[in-house]
Structures are given as structure tokens and as C-alpha cells.
Length: 335
Ligand code: SAM
Image 1: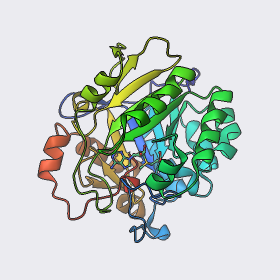
Image 2 (image 1 turned 180 degrees about the vertical axis):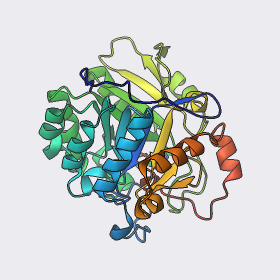
Image 3 (image 1 turned 45 degrees about the vertical axis):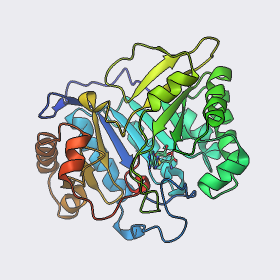
């Protein structure tokens, strides 16, 4: 959503130590989820953060103001499942109006999202990313451990009916069949949406998926489709392709291959209020501790600038230098 009336003059620009402009913040507002996707979380015993330890909405509003003042203009609300946290929509209504914010997006699994779509449309949401790995109800149930494919489809159709810009995120696992890829891609043939196929990454919450990530996705898709790459405006996470006879487009997110690090413009805040400057780092700044010790906005801004000034050059370097005790779940980071 663009707020043409807003002045950007008071906002700085935030650059990292490798010359990349940082304009995008992903806020994971909870680590809880109403699905248990096998590649993301264990069925039982997922370690969730106690509710009292996650950032309050007022704290996140304050942080968004600070980040917007530094030059962040694009926000994404994610989780866990963002709509599994109470009052997610009123929170989004608050932050969409913050000076400097020109785009508010949400990433969701679509399980309870359909009932919020009128509110999202009304507030001027910039886009919805909907996670959907298969159109086969049995496989959906086996992947997510819930028999709720119809809920996700209702969210998809609800977005299309309301003309909310829609992207479908599909994680491609070792076990994912070509038929599955072709049927999900068929959504882009039929509807004006972008289906993005995602490499699986090693963020599975210690659920037994110990074989790291999947790569070579591009070669796999090139074997299935006549890919014609669309010139994308940088920075971009996905490479987007047009296909003959398709209403929408398909794309590839080569996160595990670290293909988009050279133009990465993203920061992340975890539900515990920790700043991450790379998906593969262990967190670089405890924002919650600063908020809880009555630190001034100016001091917090300075600490953010300092952290961004020490960013890893790419996800390979971050992974190499940050030893992890346990494999985290993507739900604790937000994707
Ligand atoms: N609950 C929301 C959803 O499902 O979209 C937002 C959070 S979810 C963690 C964000 C994205 O991360 C989803 O598209 C999900 O498929 C993806 N994801 C989770 N685990 C992953 C993994 N190990 N590798 C790649 N993507 C993963």
C-alpha cells in the first residue's frame, strides 16, 4: 500500500557494511502455529516460548516506528501463524498507519485467515503470501498433520475474490513429486497469482529432517516447464518466470543455495524480540532487553545501525560462523 501523503523526508536510509540498503523488516509475532508441517516442527514437544516472554504489541509498534525512522518501508507480519495470536488484525491496523511504512504484507498458512480478509482488504494490505504445498487432501494431511486443506483453499479464493495480491509459497521436499509441482503450478495457470517454489532449508525444529536443505530446484523446474525469466526489480528473493498460457507466474526461492544474499534487504525480529540480520545467524541484538530497560529510541536506533554495520556477507558465512546447539524451527524465525 502506498501512502502518497506521507513525507519520507525525516527518514534516513539504512545501509549495511556491504553496501546493501536495508528497507524490509519481517516481524514474527508468535512462534505458535495451528499446523505441524513435518519440515518445520515436530508433532509433539515443540518448544514454544512462554507467552509472557514474547514482545507485546505496544512494544512492536514502538519498534516499527524506530525502524521506519531508519528507512524501513516494507513490513511483513509472520510467525508461527500470525492469525493464531489474538488481536493480530488490530495490531496490523496500527502499524500500517506508521509514517514511512509504504507496504504491509502478511505470510499465513490460511487456516483461520479467511474470516479476516475483509479487514485486511479494508486496511489496504499490500499482499498475502499463502503457504500451500499440495492440492491433494491426503498428502496435505500427512504433511501438515491436519485435515484442513479446505480452509487454505477458502483463504486463497477469498484473496482472489477481493483482489488482494496473492503469492503461494510451496516448499519442495526430497519427497515432493513432479505431479505435485505441476498441480500447484496449475494454480498460476488458472489464477492471477504467483506460485513460488521454495528450497527446503535446515530449520525444522529438530523433527528428524536432518538432511539439511534441498538444492538444484531450478534444474528440476526447468525440466518440467518452459521457463522464461521475468526481469525482476531488485532486491528480490524470488526469480520469477512467465509461462505460455499462464494467467499468473511461477517463481523459485533459492534460500538454501543462498542465491539472493547479494541483494538481501531484510531484517527479522523474532517473537522474543531478537534482531536477526541474516536468516542463518543466531540473533545479533536483544531489542526486548533494550525496551525493558527503558532505553531511549535514539540509543536503540544506534544499536540497530551498529548491528546492520556488522552484517554477514551472506548466509553461508553466517551459517559457518554461528554454531547452533539445536536446529531451530522456521516458526521461531518467521520464514
Ligand atoms: N504460518 C505462516 C505460514 O505458514 O506461512 C508463517 C510462518 S511459516 C514458518 C513461513 C514459511 O516458512 C512458510 O511458507 C513455510 O512453508 C516455510 N518453512 C517452514 N519450514 C521451512 C523449511 N524447513 N524450509 C523452507 N521453508 C520452510
